[in-house]
Each structure stands twice: as structure tokens, then as C-alpha cells.
Image 1 (cartoon, rainbow, N blue to C red):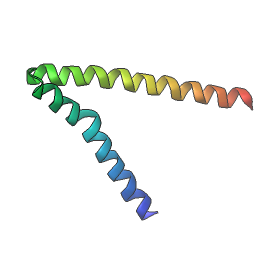
Image 2: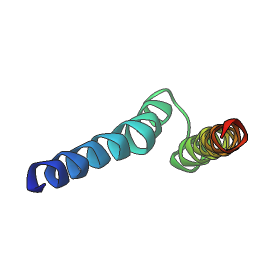
Image 3: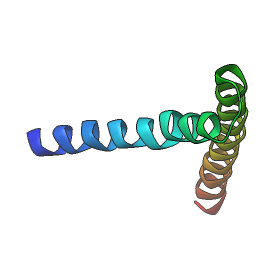
Image 4: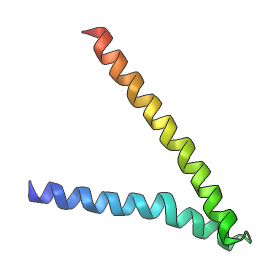
Length: 67
């Protein structure tokens, strides 16, 4: 159980780096201002999070409907 907890923390750190910090750094290095880079990443994050919630609710709906 402890290994699972450590693995989840490592996955969360990797997800945080890849989904927020790395794209912002790439936008910034591409010549955008820091504010534009973080706004772009925020918009992308908002869209992907909303899509994930919609997919999760759809899967729950399908699971309940098939029972």
C-alpha cells in the first residue's frame, strides 16, 4: 500500500510538470510573454479538464444504465 501511495505521488508530480509547467515554458520560449503563456496553458487545461469530466460522467451513466 505504501508503494502505491509513492507511485501515485510520483504520477501526480509528473502530471503537474507535463500539464502545466512544461507547456508554459514552451510558450514562453516561443516568444510569448509570461502572462500569455500561462493564460494559454490555463485555457488548454480548462478544456482538457472539462473533457475529462464529461467523459467520466458519460462512463458513469453508461455503467449505471447497463445494470
